[in-house]
Each structure stands twice: as C-alpha cells, then as structure tokens.
Length: 522
Image (cartoon, rainbow, N blue to C red; front, side):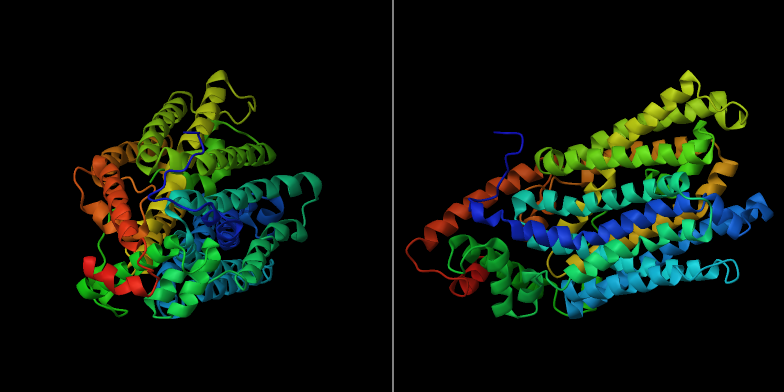
C-alpha cells in the first residue's frame, strides 16, 4: 500500500474523490485564513513603532501597557466564544451555508471598523472591531469543520477538514510576515500600521463571495426533511447518479442515523442540550501566536525586526509541516498517534527552552545582541517544538471534534468544542504578558506539564476516528478498550457492507426504497 493510499470503510468509486468536494472545503476554509491571519498579525502590529508611537505606548507604565495589549488581543477571543454558540442557533434554523454568510459579514463589519482608529479616536474603535471580528470567526470556527466533515467521504475526511487547518496556517504565515515586510519597506506612519488591519478584508471577502457558490450540507437538508434538495446536493458532491449503490447506501445510513437520534434523543432546539454527550476533548501555541515578539525576546532575540523575522520563520515552519500533516499524516497515521507523539516531543522541547532561560537569563543581556550557542539551541528546540505541535495538537483536535458527534448534536457539540477553544484562548491571551512578568521561565515548564498530562488522556479516552463514517461514531465510542475500537468498527462496517450489497443485488433498491428497511435493521 502506497504512502498516500486511502483506507476505505467500503468500496468507493473514484468519482467520489472529485474536485467539487475539495473546492467546497477550500472555499469554506477561507474562514480559517481569516482566523489564522487575525491570530498572527495582531502581536507584531502591537510592536510596530508606528503603532506604539501613535497610541503613546511609551507614556504607559509596564503594567498599564500589558493590560492595554491584552485587552486588544483578548476581546477577540471573548467575541469568538459567544460567536461559537450563536452559530449553533443559526445552523439549526438556517443551515451551514447561510450561517457562514452571516458570520463572515459580521467579521467584515468588524474589520472595517478597525480601519477607523487613529490617535484622536483612541484604541476603543480597534477593541470594538475586534469584538465583532471575534464573533465572526467564532461562528465560522463552529461551522466550517462540521460543514466539511458532513461533505467528506470517510477515507479523506481528515485530509479535507485538514484544509481548514491549512488555511489557518496560510493566514498565519501572512500575518507573521506582513509587519516584517512593511517595517522593511515603509517609513513609520499611520498608513504603515493600517495595512495589516486592512488585509483582514481579503480572506473575508473571498469567503463572502465563495459562500454564494458552495452547496448546503446534504446531511443538514436530510435532517430538515428537504430530501429532494439533499439528494441533489449529495449527488453533485459525490459526482454520482442517485441510483448508484454508493449513494443508495449513504442515504440509507443517513436516514437510519437521523431516525435513531429522533427516537432516542428527540427533535427540537433545546432537546439537544440535554442529550449532548460531553466527549472530553493547553500547549502554549496561542501564547506564541499572539505574543511572539515577547516570546522570542525571552529567549534572547533583540531588536524589533529580528523579532519579526524570527516570528516569520515560525510561521513558515508551521505551514510546511501542515502540508505534510494534511497530505500524509492525518489519514495515514491517524489521530491518536499524532496527538500522543506530538505531546511527548513538544513537552521535551518546552522543558529544554525553560531550562535554558532559567540558567542563562538571556533577556537580561540587552547590550549583547548576538545569540550564544545555548540561545541558538533554544531557537532550534523552539522550531522543533513547532514541528511536533503543528501536526498534532494544532489541527487534529478540530478534525476529531468535527466528526465525533451524531447528526443531531454535531452543531451543538462543535459549538461547545469551539467555545471551549476560544475560552482558553481568551485566558491565555489575557494573562500571557502577566505570566511572563511574574513566572519567567516557569511559563515554559507550565505548558510542558500540560502536554505531558494530555498523553494518558488520549490513550485511555480518545478512539481512533480515521475512516469511520459519521453515522458510526456513536458505536465507535462504545467499544472498549479504546485502543482497539477503530479496528473493531471497521471490521463490523465491512461485514455490514457485504450484507447490504448482497440484499441490494437485483432488488432494484433506491435511496427512497431503502429508507424504511435500513431503519428497521437499526
């Protein structure tokens, strides 16, 4: 089996792996470009001399400046927290496609609002715009992963949801480099710091236009009883006719899953809050994304442009590793192994960096801008940590959260997971400067410890979800021990597949005819 060979739950026609499903995933993932860019550009923008001079940062005390910076950064996460839950309501009533349109519009309004800031108006305009942008990206972070997972064939679901993570890294790469570029090519001015704020509108505009073209999720349409449009969308996405056995079986499985949920959980907006199972889902990445100049200064990087350059290289490493994760690791190695290996390797790197800072205190040597051999080693381990973290805890949890909930609870489950992510982002972004002021090297030991603790959590509680159809996830989480669950469920699915195709052979089954019989068997 080749390195890029797919592990299929059942015989799958080549037509299923067509450009349409990739195009829908790519367009929806412009949302993650917005998120990635916003997460990356703000830290270096706050360090731009033109920005600090216009808003008189030099006149503030260290404590006041830390508070101002954390407010600018953290209100974005606060908005995203609430946006994640708002998206559950919009997706339940309006669907995935319209929800994306709504939240990208809110994001664009927030991004446009930030462009009105100046010395006279103060930072309040930026803070207000960041709240609106946060609500937009919070809603998008709920919608996009589940939209892609509902469109994706099981064998490439990790790869397709991974496009969302790739978009995040591409947006982050631009965000990390933008301020290095303008600081090298433009004199300090109001326009200089305004440019990185304006670029937010590019991925937002592309998503707004693209959201008019993409198809609504067939699974959401089936759930709402719009079978004709659901079947038409599914056939278009799969590039197969309605009477193809693959479509017949997929529709039957969707129907059975929806009927099972309605029987055992019940329908309705509020019912799902009671029924939602908490499938338990820090590592320090957001502290680095938002405050990268501060992080590199603690290791010994001196000078604004040197800090920007080192931050830019950090973005390059993340993006390159994300391509490897997307094409090879997520659907070949699987989710569990990536999370455990990434946590172990990343923790070792954090311990080394913290120990180096403890022993040499490089930030105190402000007159010597040349890195020592220990400092070079610390930079190496920082980038090695990035290589461990990016293909594991950076994107893989988004894949797992998008696929592990049932059809009825998927939107609410993803809202809970996304809100949890943004809550901890808020905590980290709000308190990272204070942590570095009071803990110093201990910040690295803190995150290293959290990564180690995540290993037994994954080993004992998280089953491997690769290649498992969405409708079989409930059964997957019932199988014990967890480490064998994927093999057991794949074997069961292949046996059911043989039985279904045997029954269908010569019976003239269609998507409508199989609905009742499949429900009865479940």
